[in-house]
Length: 93
Image (cartoon, rainbow, N blue to C red):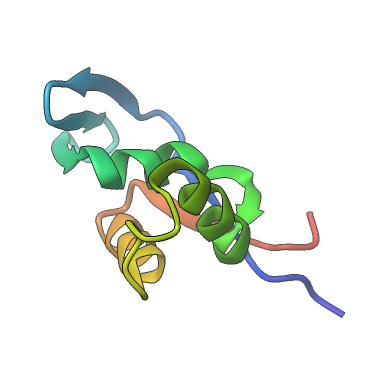
């Protein structure tokens, strides 16, 4: 039985903290992404070891149970994947 997919940052990215989040440069496509601090937390949690459920658990610990709206993790992960700075990897690895 396959595990849930895990999330990892795309290879080769350069990330730098900014006052209001993260600035991420993707040299593969010569593109700069600017994400807010909340999305930055999700980005950092995408280390290839966590699935969406585990990312939500850790993020709840960071933000607090009343500060993370329903669906926020799924929306953030979807946006990070769509932007090409995070990708899903097989959960069996």
